[in-house]
Length: 169
Image (cartoon, rainbow, N blue to C red; front, side):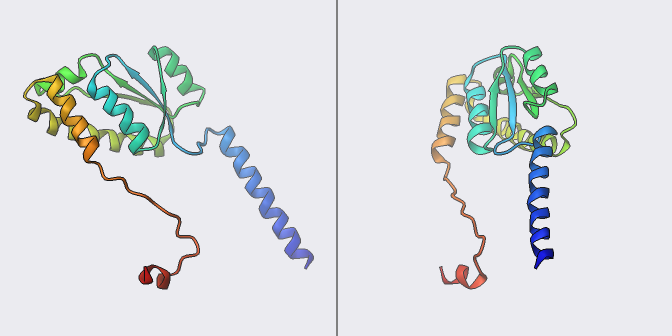
């Protein structure tokens, strides 16, 4: 009986230490904090902001300059810096590939996650942009139409749910 109590106390202590170490080492709870530096305010940057926060559930810290966001990155307040260069939307409308600039330190898991999603996002923009015919207003309408057509997906925890419970629903 004593062994069981000691094991339980050790488990609680390990969980506590894990949480402390995660906080000290830059572990994130909730959405991944990301810095965003937009050198232009366009329909595409607004859509990117919504994509990061709404679709991916990230916490976006808007920055005034790259130095400020790099300081936040070095101090581990954010996991990455996403920079939207000036002329990004115009480049899309002209059919040019203008990449988003993304900076990381050594947070490889979040880097891979964010880079993959940003690559898919920019590929989607490159597919959508020709339909705008070079018109920024039309591109804004198309992006807005995509948001209106999004079907929300709800998730629920299945802890304690058995296969029989799922098949009966």
